[in-house]
Image 1 (tube, rainbow, N blue to C red):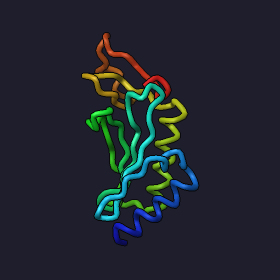
Image 2: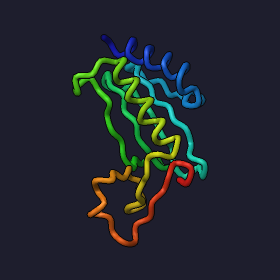
Image 3: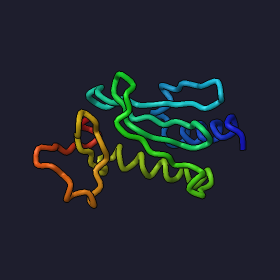
Amino acid sequence: MNQALYSEITLKYLKKNHPEFLENVDFKEDHSFDCSIKSVSGNRFLWIATYDLEITIGLENYKKECDWHFHIGASGGNNQTEELKELTKQLNEILNNEQVFILENDKYIPFDKNDEPVVKGDEKFFMWNEI
């Protein structure tokens, strides 16, 4: 599959399942794209990208500095349908305030309950609707 087709399939999926991301789409010369939505406070953007034939999601600040991101890509042995389902799962966890974030060094990092022992006493927890 080439980048143009990969991005086209992803874009159609977003139109049907996550149209809120399509208000801000930036198409690239290589036929990839990125799109985002702004947090309630306007402090962060939750973005999706299709670079290098994989879906990536992450958070960045208004300076376009990335807090975190992760790849949902073919390197994991997934096919695009599986990747899109995983994208929806991850987005739903964030947007439905099921994913907890920890503020660390001015970056919102997804908190995994397995990380509990490494949490410092002064760190605060946030949900998407608080970021």
